[in-house]
Image 1: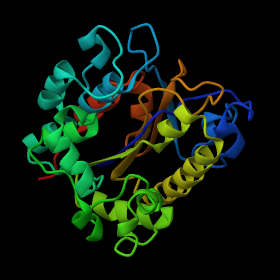
Image 2 (image 1 turned 90 degrees about the vertical axis):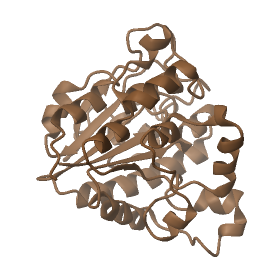
Image 3 (image 1 turned 90 degrees about the horizontal axis):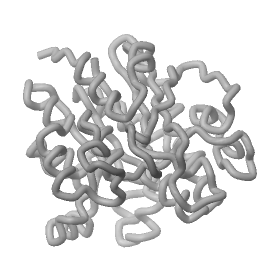
Image 4 (image 1 turned 60 degrees about the vertical axis):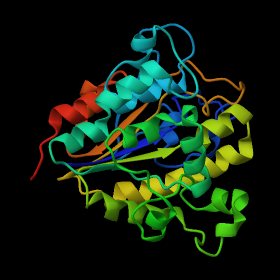
Length: 299
């Protein structure tokens, strides 16, 4: 079974009120369930995930992402929720339990598919405390982060899917990396998946839009993601592949506040064993643990 595991930062199941929830206002297909509890999607098997992980307070990024990518309860390890970047305790967990590392240990092919700019790579080399959970998960497997050469060779995709944010903040790359449609990027990602057993991808602009309470950016994120996801859902082979979407905490589904939310987050599954995943996954750490439990190397 090939697994495409998408992490979409800061999205949860929210109110159907379009004055509060941009998913209720803008989503029309693969993310409509986050703003319309009566909507039935033709492909997704759905399991709302508890992001609290047994601890009070608002769920946070460092602990939630550690759980999603290691199968270890990050909040339990800390005794509370931790925001921002992983510190020593969470880094140690990721170094030992990274799902990419665990796949590779038995000869399976696994990778984080995000491409990073030279500026970002230089920053985390000079200031390691700014390494995100996702970059630590990749580096724990002794693989380098994907770079812009990988992006150019269609062996990676950029964090914004379309290159629009790249053009805005790094205009020197416009000619080298023309804008891509979400459909084009999804097709590239499917090609990458078929060379691996596990592919991880991180999209974090949703969380940025939520913290800024930015309705315009929220709309862009939702429309971009839905086009991207609809193409992936249409292209996945449900007999041999599984598409997973999960998040670490709520945020974008409630623009009445700048903070994270207490809402359950999506565990969305389509493809091989999707109903089993929806039945087994109730908290963040359940997702990687179920992947690992069903992993059957083909070589």
